[in-house]
Image (cartoon, rainbow, N blue to C red; front, side, top):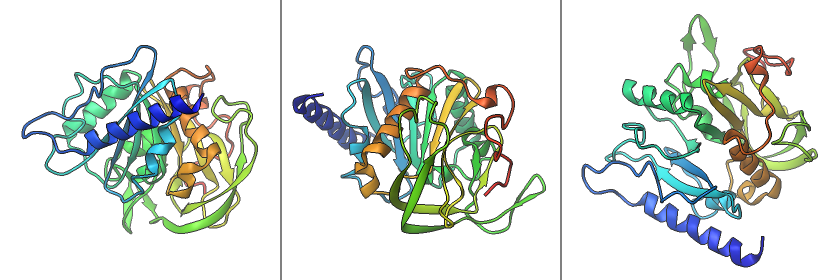
Amino acid sequence: MNGQLRYVTAAAVTIALLFAAAAPAPGAKPAASGAPAQAGKIRVLVVTGGHKYDKKVFPRIFTGHDDMQVTFHEHKKGRPHLFDDVSAWAHDVMVLYNFKQRLSTAQRANFIKLLERGVGLVVMHHAIAAYSEWREYPKIIGATYVLRKGVVRDGVKYERPVWKHGVKMKLHIEDPTHPITAGLADYEIVDETYKKWTYHKGNHLLISTDCPLNNRQIAWTRTYAKARVFFHQIGHGPGIFKDKTYRTLIARGIRWTARRLGDKTDPAAQAAGAGDKSSVVGSR
């Protein structure tokens, strides 16, 4: 793609970010449908809120892709919630980069309605705990990350995870045949580690690490209802937002969840844990 197209795409994403951050008129609904759909493009909604991040660099992850139309939405107090009404939903993929928020019973039901319609889901970094109090969320994304000590669910006591900023990690491609990771080699990054969270059965592991400060599992796919789900733990930034391989993985994850990339199905569609011998609850 030439520099002119890259500039236009970056400008379009920046404008979308500015509009999404603006407070709506009192009583107005969130702009769930975003800008008018452009023929053939994957309509992507990036959801933020509840956690600090580099707002200037973060949008770069989603630039330079001619097949995507990206809209940003920030969860904020005082504005209508994104999942209050999904009847006019017009996005193919939802990318979560939000943290520590609550959903009402109706909002949870609407979230699941989207997945039942086949809306793709990409979950990045701290969104592992986007809706940590919702029991169904770990089943959707394939991981449990609690935010307080002494959490017991269904007789299982969960440890509170630990993290550390600015750690160098070697990442290993577990499945070089999957459309998301095809052609990629092992590489090193510097980002935030997550340790002691719980990995669930039914995930198809794509990327791992041997870093002792992190769980072994880094990125995976799974299915929930009719939705394809892609999770990538890395993403604290801002340096990683500029990383070419990371941006490639997120872009491919979006395409794969939108069913625009490959037709390889997840082991979860056949039998929980197939294809990843380590995918037992509590694996670390």
